[in-house]
Length: 330
Image (cartoon, rainbow, N blue to C red; front, side, top):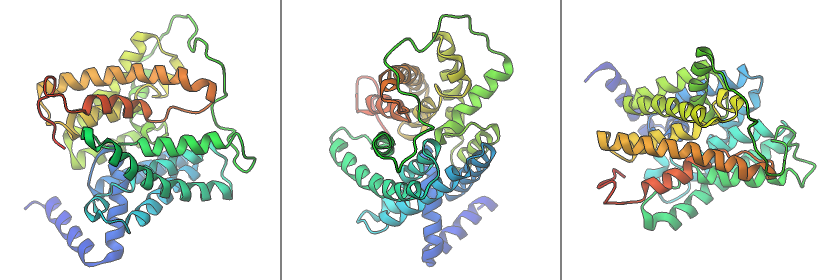
């Protein structure tokens, strides 16, 4: 047994013996599960990346909101029957994203923190409901609970003065989102766009955070890290070829959902192979198209797409289809 395995084994023993350490362990796994990883060390790297990115962008509320959302969702999930799912962190990751998203678009007021607590609890309930509805097709709820809960609260901010949604996109009628012009990308912009596609999964644009996320992925699965890099690279290239809005491409807006699609199709629900690689490439490219389509659909509502392009594309590609993908690893 190597040093890393020995340390992991010792930590697992401590978690099994001490309820406080067990809760910390599950909370860390909840953060890691945003990118399908069941490893507390991965979660630690992810939280480090979130705090680096949050403070680096002058939005510490986002980092603390992320931590609060994960803790609340994990605490609520502790009392549910499915103990195995709870210990794997599967009840925490949607709350983690709710806690990251709300402070990104809503002003930091006492009401915001109450919304994070409520939204994190509801995300667990919605996850169970969605999982029960779609179990016939043998696909996971993914981040759909996070998206639905966050959309509801962001849309509600237009109706309630207690929720300041000044950071939300400006509502506008459907119109061409990109003006005809020659787009020019420098090598530096391309590199930043590619890396931002990884950190934007948590709604932050930070090169350092992206590197920490990749390290966290590699700790649990080198394949997951490879597919994350390939996914964001392919998504950025696809968006550039299609002539997407340059500012959106530069900020990783066309890549973050594709990153999740790449990890899900390439290494989480399928065993990596050449067939799976081709399948994943198609799924990532399609995710970019879904991103553009949802940008157009949601512009009049003035709310962000969040990770719904990933959810829709992955649901379609993860449904059992023996003619296309003979076997899934569930």
